[in-house]
Structures are given as structure tokens and as C-alpha cells.
Length: 377
Image 1 (cartoon, rainbow, N blue to C red):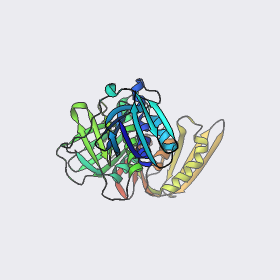
Image 2: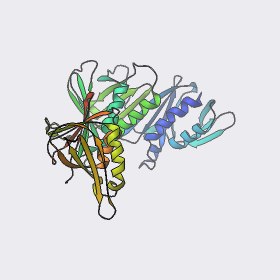
Image 3: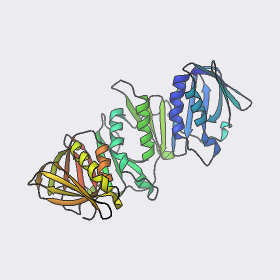
Image 4: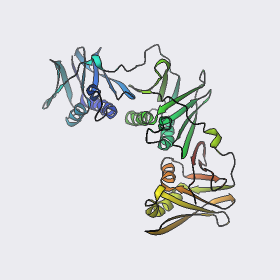
């Protein structure tokens, strides 16, 4: 194996691949990136057995070959050298990298035992295409609501519901729920549900951000590998392969309220400023509890946090409300999470009673909804 390539392109792709590699994997070969050099291209693959990445870069190939190289150390070396030509060759199970003033050598592991990672074939047709901006919006608006442990694996994933003309991204950890709907540019053949690990979609969002261009017509292609229970997302010269989570996602539609007794419109900046004040105390309370007192007649919401050993504080902001007054309590962290992951300023809060979920919407974007279960007042 012998090739030459540009440092800047090489480094950019290695940085993405090394993110997938675990720091202490169970199998030593999973520390490595699989290199397959042929036909003036370098194919590189990294995997942690749940999420995998395939990517390709152009290169001057003198001798074709295949091997695996330690991912993180190689990425660090390539990032440390100047933007110039990098020469590489494999000799006696050691791969050598050389530039004008720098050299490095890495011990390799034979590629025979590297896990098989699916890749898209020329004959494969995508299940659907989604605009990159829509994918970024959907992942940002729902991924924060997934469970951060594996106690219930289905809650650590994001449900992708594909229907004839729409696609829904839904996440819940049992105490909150976030849903983003997107309109598809073309119809799909059949309805489908995919439960994708949150970390896979979060990595996809990073890939899109790292490799985005100024073109407005960039799309993410989605391929369903049914026989392997996997899904492939293709963007630019990168394929992200993820296993699907087995299990039944909660039937979430029945908990989304269809009406309200109290409704308020407010500016996102206003409630965020108030939350920053009351969180000084709330962060010391179990569950980050903050009480919300909605006063319709005075057109304001008062936020209060109290802790017996420290003290209490409160902050209020103006709203445009209708319906009944309401006293309810929420986790300050959950409130801040949803506010930090939307990019619209005009928001809506709806609720029926102090024991019902609080519903947060965007005034100018009906495709998003967030529910937060209340705490005891």
C-alpha cells in the first residue's frame, strides 16, 4: 500500500472518523481506522459497533492495499503537520507517513478481523431525501429530550416516523417529549418507523456542520438496510451507518393535549433572563424545581425558587395571556433545555391544570411541540 494525499483534506476526514472510535473499546482493532486504498481513492471506515462512518478522499495511489491504523494517534499527527503533501506506505505491518520535515510510523492490525460495515451500492435507491437544514433543525430540537442512560434503551433513541408526505422526529425520556415534523419534498412508497440512537443522529448533525457548503440544494439521503436492522445516512462523501434500536417506542400521541385552560405568548429572551435569575437558587434544589405563577389579569408570569438552607428568589416577565390563572412547577433544567434548542423568539405556553403536561410551542412554526411533565407545587 502506497499513496499520497493533501494534509488538509486528510485531517478533516480523520477528525470525523476519530470521534466514532471509543477511548477504550473491548476489541483492540476498534481503536483503528480501516484503510482500503485503490483506484485513486482512499476508503476509510471507523466503527464502535453501534455507529459507523465510511468516507472517501481522492489520492495519488501508487500501490493498492488494505490495513487498519490507530485512529486517534494518526488524526493527532496529521493535524499537527503543515498543509502539504503527505506520503504514506505500508511495510512489514508498519505504516509510514512522511512530509517535508515530519515522519511518523504506526503499527497496524491486519484488516481481516475488522467488523463488516455496510456501504451503499450503485444500484441502491434511497428511501428518501431530506434537506440538510431540516435535518439539523430536527436533531437540534429533539435530541436533548432523549434519556441519557440505557435503563430503557428505547428512550435513548429518536423515533423517525415516515409517512406519505411527512416525517416526524420524536424523543422522550419519560418526563418530557419533543417533536419536530417536516414536510417531504416527494412522497414515499410506504409508512415506516425507525428508532435511531440519539448519538448517531447527533453525529450526523456534526458531520453536516463540518462538511456543509454554501449550496442550497444539499440533501441527506436515507437508506434502510432491513435485513441488518440498520439505517444509512449519506451526506457528501460520508456514509453514517447506525444500528436501529429494538423495542416499542412509547405511544406518545395520547399524552399530547388537544386543548388548554391557560395560554400565554411571550418572548424567549424574557423567560430565559428570568430563568437565569431563579436558577441561582433552583440549581441547589432536587430536580431544579421552579414554580411558575401565571397571572392572566396582570399579563405576567412569576418564576420562584426556594431552598430552606439558602433562601429564595423570584423574577417575572410580561406575557400576552388568555384563560385561567395557573400555578405549576417545572424543572428549571428542562425549561432551559427547550429554550436553548429553538431559534424562534416568539413562543407559546399552554396548559390545562397544575398536574397536566406543560406544552411549549413556537408561534410562527406549528411543526414543533415540546411537553414537560410538572412537579408537585
